Length: 310
Image (cartoon, rainbow, N blue to C red; front, side, top):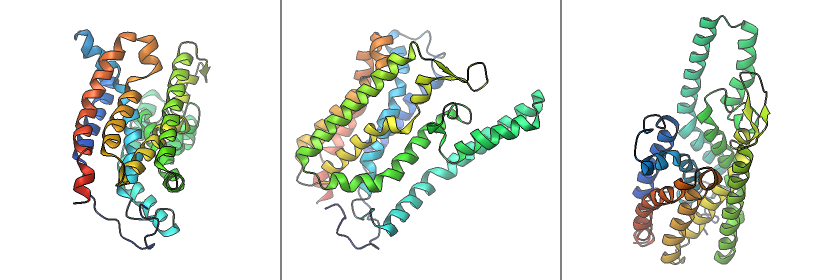
């Protein structure tokens, strides 16, 4: 089942590209970029457009779900639980994300040095920032430490979270491989429920969250910190893994693979504490936006099992 009985030196099999997922990732990335940098640009746009831009942060949840799904899909010809294949898996993931990430790390460091020189910052303070926040960021650990994620390349917290996902994947996958499809469906429901609880909890905290390191250059609220903790995003990743296992089982009903993947992604993207509580008018436009994105997945995935076995 999915490579568990394969020899340890089995090469990674090249599988058909799921083109619609590539397109969806592009739109999700665009949504995240617009959320961070387009708020001002769209301030005079129609309400429905501002709603979409404001809900763009939920594209990150889509990335985390797709991460689990794609990892299962691309490793189905190998057994990533064996030491050699696990090592190869980690090396591939490292080579895929870290070089560009480290380049961004250096660019942020250059900006800091320029700023410190311009403002006459003490050498001791600069050394402390590099030794603590710079090191945590370089090691992809910033998501676990209060105030660390927001100092050195804040968007990099998502890579800190992905690193945790990659580290756990070879150990989580065999657990789900041993489950029947009915049990996987229960896990899917549990992951979705856990995600809603986390999102709702962070939303409730955001309105009256206490500040960490108040009065310093590194202050953040507890809700901001918890929003970057990798463990709290783990249900999204596990949901993707569960969907990947179901999808790669050729006996899985095409109806389930198509519609439940779409339903899960739409729900995760559309449901959010901040979306439903703080800005209720965003909810329906945001859900329609995510529905449009998932439509392309739905079209392609419904045909993929047949094409993979042709």
